[in-house]
Image (cartoon, rainbow, N blue to C red; front, top):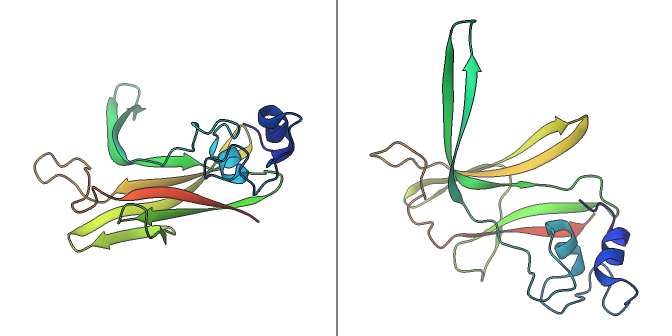
Length: 172
């Protein structure tokens, strides 16, 4: 993970100075260098745009030991996505999760909370703070609030098939 824009610029742009400043677009693909750096795409390749986060179904299992002789497996199913923020970047940046329900014409900020549409509950957004090897980690999680009425597992909320998500990245 490259936490300094100067290091990113050296890796992807080398000695080339044209359009290499933070808010310029070196490869003319429509995503500025700040966004490509923070979201992990190659700012020198116009084919390498930052990917939009897309909700998917996933299952994780954990073995839980309650006593010396008792074990059970906890299975957690989700329909959603998570995004790990880069912390301690130079320069510092802010992230704003946004949602479009009209194919990307209008974008709405999504702070932490639960969201609904005319069909009922849709998405839950929450920011989770943890540590890894004493290093702070901040992850944005977006999960479906809808469960399939037959299987009782998380699924695509009704009326959200055209929902698109993105992270708007700004210099702090």
